[in-house]
Image 1 (cartoon, rainbow, N blue to C red):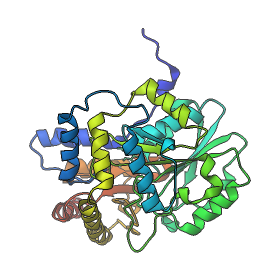
Image 2: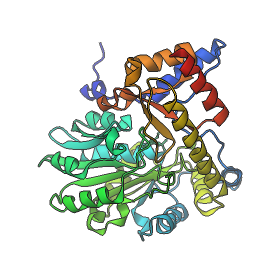
Image 3: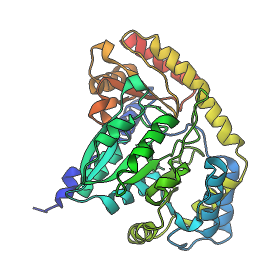
Amino acid sequence: MTTLAAAMARLGTESAFEVLARAKALEDQGRDIINLGIGQPDSKTPDHIVEAAVKALRDGHHGYTSATGIVELRQAVAADIQLRRGVSIDPANVLIVPGGKVTMFFAMLMFGEAGAEIIYPNPGFPIYQSAIEFSGAKAVAMPLHEETGFSFNADEVLSLITPRTRLIILNSPANPTGGVTPRAEIERLVDGLQAHPNVTILSDEIYARMVYDGREHVSLMEFDSIRDRLILLDGWSKTYAMTGWRLGYGVWPKAHIDGATRLAINCHSCVAAATQFAGIAALEGPQDAADAMIANFDKRRGFIVDALNQIPGITCAGSSGAFYAFANITGTGIGSAALQDKLLNEAGVATLSGTSFGHMGEGFLRFSYANSTANIKIALERIRECL
Ligand code: PLP
């Protein structure tokens, strides 16, 4: 019998990939499935970005790059942060990695171990809890409530901090809820964190460009008082429809960039060179395709929220960011996981059970509106009939 490390039993997963596989299997049997489950844009990467990668390959960029990422890309990230977040950072603190997830995983490896505690949003991106538990640390749930638009409550978060807390994970705009945390709540949290100087913050801002209804994205980067203990996670996957390219970045505090770079050298060496050139073109090139995609999400958002509210048993308070609507399904009398299965098998619509995002997700289903309005319309019609 082989013996595995105990940590393997603590590793969770991201159900979106399992549902995607089940939807694909049903499609292979000839079923027509509309996928509102997976969290990725339905558009292609803009042409000028693809061309930049093709050119890089033709120009012979086939070898390793620096583990931190090519200088021009790190500079482009710094310029983008200056432009969009109004904050000046040193490109030397940027670590280019293969996808947003990698910054997350490295943060958990750096801070997590038995005896440590890490606070994470629940419902939240499932890899937070999984990676925390894998590291050996205790995953402490920061509950997010429907009544407050799934924004965290600063006092509630601060009350979870103990002498063992090493890291707090924040995510706004949020997956799976579409919640956007208001400035006042973030300011109260930052103020409260002054009493906890040993706690590091990981701010996952991968949906930063996708905010609607006149809401603003408030970056944790704006707050000087925590800059020396803030890890910013962002990337290209969502904004530039580049999920399959595997490209993301972390901005690390000066004290930790060398540790994060060592993790990169041990893990993946560097991101594919051509992908990095594509990343420069994305940040420095025209933004019209990204802007149009986001404007489209906004339109579909209005449509899906209204349509969900017209289905008996389902209510959706709204979605202020990202491309997800997190609908309350308690009125159907069916549990979240059972309803996810029923809708996939009987209505041919893939959604994700709220419980895929933690125990606080019971009673909810996540609908991704990164799909055409026509498809969303048919999907919701099928759901209404099915129920
Ligand atoms: N963070 C959040 C909140 C996400 O929803 C996702 C992807 O769904 C990621 C990070 C990971 O992004 P990537 O595909 O770039 O690894």
